[in-house]
Length: 366
Image (cartoon, rainbow, N blue to C red; front, top):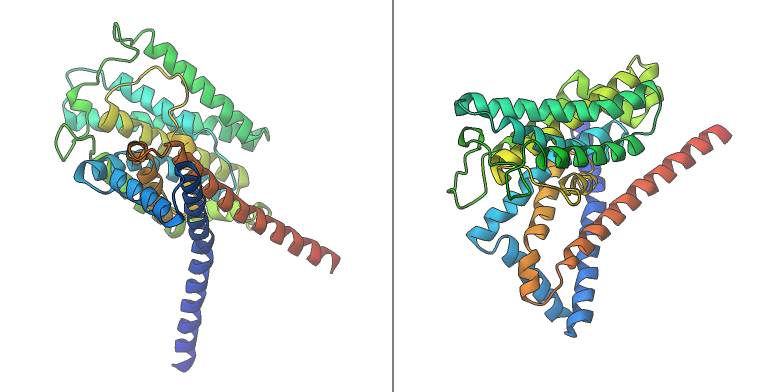
């Protein structure tokens, strides 16, 4: 009985230590980023430190959570980040860097805009159709570089970057060509039967896509820690050689992870069109949610629950841009905060990589 109690106690302590180590660096990165942002506000506005702190935090709070409308817009920003953050997290767990989430999201947007124009379908058929279409489009777009990585050994970073540009220009060709709405740089609005329900009224863009994102967080968590597939994905990411020695196929799991990652990103694009934008627009640059998803996944340490909180943080920062400008703080301060967070989190990964490399060298030499 005493031995069991001690084992339970030790197990709890190990979990707490692991959680503490996981959360420490992201929390430090957020604190340092906010501190640096305050210094820029103090320097730019010529005010004291405490006044600058008050100005910055009040502006961020008012612009993101200070009113019903700002709260709604914050979660409008959060919704796509849930999908792109999860998409990147799945790839990271396999040791892959899927820069192509942006392109997979864009393809999801395009396919949804096309399928959403089909007339005569009831909502009970139309909405599942566009969701499945977005998932399949993103999965194919992610699976191509995954297959090339596994079978040919090409670098997934280079391939996915190229796929991003292909997705953007393909989207522009269709948006400004066959599906162009005359006089507007976009497709026509999708049919009402393809639109997700905006549960706080038509004037607000918050929609049931948020709940789909929350459900997906739970599903990805179950995938990672409750299924054989998730175990194999994590094993390949932690140590591919040990995983292969244990009978796990590295190539299969690389392709599978990229397909799942792309499918989640494509679903995010479908939710974006169906719930928020209602059409596909000509792109003069990337939409950006895929790249923001990289930062979300890094800050979350590729944990699904962490993706939720990181998405809320980045969504709140993006939503507060107008509020910051109203108090004469440039909205670029948001990008500064995000950049510093990414730098610190990336430094943590580098620190761990150096530590593991030294351990391996010590084992070889010792």
